[in-house]
Image (tube, rainbow, N blue to C red; front, side, top):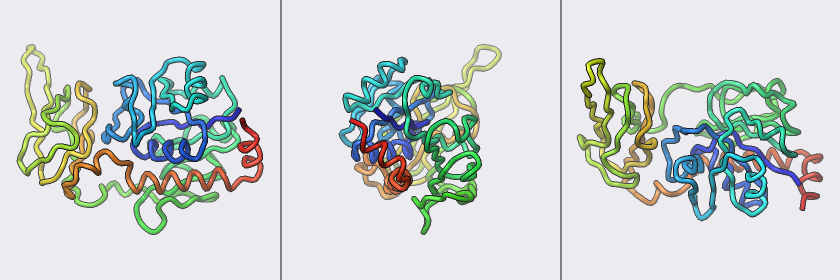
Length: 275
């Protein structure tokens, strides 16, 4: 029996997982103990906090056991395992490894980690540290598969209106004031950062909405954040339903992963032979 391993369960990775799962692949996701996913409502990584989450009707469940992860995948549930180093690779037959962490640097695991190793976005070189790369930058090449070379370089700029991105104004513990999907107006308080001082006093830093829209994402409340970290996202289209749907970008990237998997004749035979 063959499985697909996804490193990372953020919103782009979850779009990949969704497409693979719906196409009949058994997907296992590895994550950090405290993921920093912003679009939590459509990120399977959120299972690390809630125990389980449904994204567009697909159920994911948190586990710390490799054996249970394989059992859940066989039952049609996407397991999210606390395994930042992807040690689960030593416990089962994986057809493909997809590095969806978006760290913008190559994996330490290399080409030998699985029969097919795929990287999402910049930081990889096809043929050197991955077999294939999927373009993640919006534009004419979004979702394309590269078997040589690299994806588009990270330009450091957010897509669309840069004001939509919320960043931590200071280091400290995040506390949310509203929920994902809520309408916001410019100047409204979205969250606050509580910073403990050396004299045991607490300084509160407000996170203010710079534009009108809906709160599309916010990292999990209670996390300790560093100053400047991306912690949230406002969607100026002002449609709450978009907050709970996997994005067109994530689905396009997922389509690229499917193409890469099915492009390899040797893997097609192996995958279709799996019960």
